[in-house]
Length: 161
Ligand code: SF4
Image (cartoon, rainbow, N blue to C red; front, top):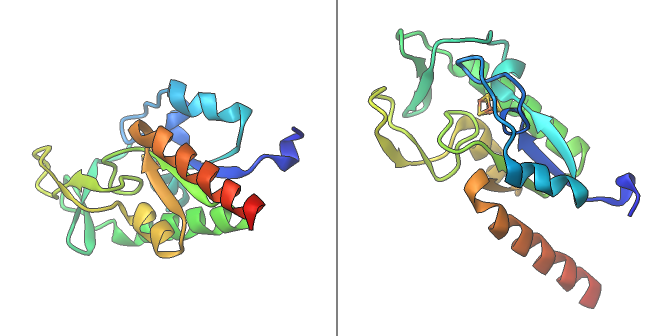
C-alpha cells in the first residue's frame, strides 16, 4: 500500500515522543508507533499551536475555562490550539484520532477536575471535545484496539454498500 493510500489518523505529538508535554517530556508509545504501518499519522500538539511555551505551567479544565496551576486563565490558548488541530484533521481527512489520555487538551472521556489534586472526572479536553463535535472519532492511547475495530467495520461497510 502506498503511503498516500493509507487512511490518516490524528495523533498527539507527545505519544510519538515529541518533547512537548507541559514538563518538557514526551514518550514514544508502542501502540501508536504500531499504527504507522497502516495509517498516515498526523501529529499535533494543540497546546503548542495555542502559543504556550514548553515547559509550561500545568493546567486543567474547570467548567468552560482552562486554568493554570498558578491561576492564569489559558482558555484562549487552548481553544486556538484546538481549532488548529481540527483544521489539520480536516485537511488530512482524518476520521479518527488517538490522543493522550487525561490531558486538558487531548484527554477523552476522563480529565482532571480543575483542582490540581489529580482528581479525575468525566469529560473531554478542549481539543478532543472540538474534534468529536465535528464527527471525528477520538480515543485514548489505551483504546487503540477500539479505534482500529471501528475503522475496520466502517471500511467493510463501505465495500459492501
Ligand atoms: Fe501531548 Fe496534547 Fe498535551 Fe500536546 S497538548 S503535550 S499533544 S497531550
